Image (tube, rainbow, N blue to C red; front, side, top):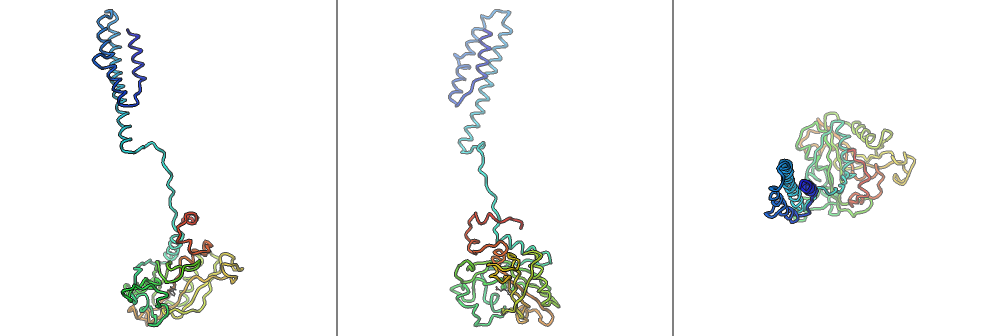
Length: 340
Ligand code: PHE
């Protein structure tokens, strides 16, 4: 009998159930009214008395083993069933989720902000839907200026006084209205112009403009600030040159070229074999603009500049088609290292 019991203990310990039904059969086989244990206990009477102690102990071991096996299998099956019913398999290998890279325009915008932050400029942003005053009139645009023309500006149909801003100079006006000099602020933002989309132009693009107003600010300060910016953005060897230009809100006005960082000034198709690439407009703030914002132009002077982020990015990364920025093609977007 001892051998039989020992064999049964092995059998119990090796038992595995694939479902609740199989486990129940196992329970009935061992613990049921006509089950194996019941039978053995009945036979126990016939065991010789000198064998009783040892056999009794084995019989008890078998009972404990059966109960233990049932309990642990129940637990296993229960948790497996729970996982299946909630549709979750926590053991499944995960799919790799690639971290998204920052958009090249964001990288360059952040870099421009960092460059000007290092020399004490703050950052200000404001609305994209503007009134005529902030986008044009306060900036000294004459009533009949062509930039107000329907061809350039997206007006709101019901109210010709409201338009999508055509430049972030509108935020310069808001800054001057809100705070008193000294002012040193840059204005990043999205702007809108009614232009046909091509490799070089888009109806939506991004600018960073800058404004410095204080006592004794001169054209020299403007030039040094822009030279500092150009060297930080395009490298220590970069040179700048200013050409006279016209903007209603600055006098004198200029356009700035940087030495071509692609050919190093020797001439290539990016700089159209001139060695120079235009990157921004700038000038001394027109006294009429200061007065429009209640800043005394006899006491204060200032300079302003504005650049397109797309243009800087195209130059920096040698991107030949502006439309790539808006297509969200991952093969394009993944190429930019995200240091900013
Ligand atoms: N607002 C001008 C533009 O959008 C850029 C500019 C800003 C020029 C400040 C001069 C001074 O083209």
